Image (cartoon, rainbow, N blue to C red; front, top):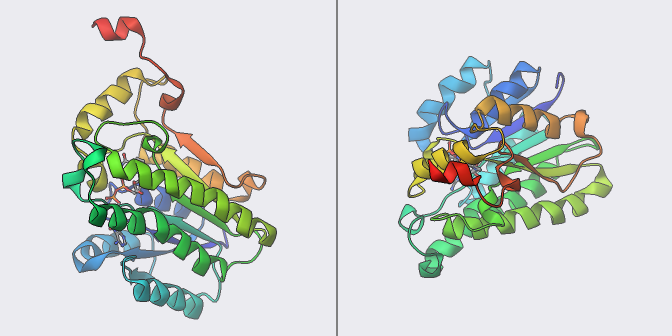
Length: 260
Ligand code: NAD
């Protein structure tokens, strides 16, 4: 990744998936910029960025399109171009990340969709305008998009929309030589992950029943991100790539595991 410049959106702290991706990319020579949502998180993100020698740390709340525009204006001014972008942003009211999907409110449905789904399309448009052929984009999804996960609810619907966006954006930007993909990790203990009711139970269940019998680490996810953001995956676009210890291939846990 030497000589490549990329924007990382979605670091909240050193447990964030975006942080795992950032440190892997930095270890492979990428030059990074970070965004943070609000000053409280900025206090955590700035020292992390500094530890990678990154001076470009920009406030950005994707609900406020002016702050998204300002972020890309700053990148254009400082770097003049962009080689990759990582979108690791998701939000839903945690009162609706429990119980039934059927009880989702219109207000939270819209807000979840704008932040967790449509923001990627808005960011992709601005990022593509700064990219040359060879540019790459990556977002983060979860298997609750295609199969029902208890309590994931409206977030699963937003991730389904996000995955469809990846395919449409890949088709739109492919002729420009820009690739668009998503990673779909298994559960990771992060701030966002903790908002889902019974997250610990889900985490332990997947650890127990995934073919690899482990949950994934930030380094596992970072490695897959490196592949999708670099020329190693030069022929891959519109892909939803699972990094979940194989959990997505399982239909039912082994009977012996259910008996113990
Ligand atoms: P995290 O809490 O560390 O990161 C979520 C990020 O979203 C935070 O940095 C937060 O500031 C940002 N965000 C939320 N609303 C925003 C807004 N309005 N404007 C700008 N930023 C905003 O949690 P994470 O688990 O690292 O989440 C990153 C991504 O990975 C999310 O899309 C999440 O759905 C996805 N994901 C998480 C898991 C998991 O188990 N943790 C699994 C699969 C996918």
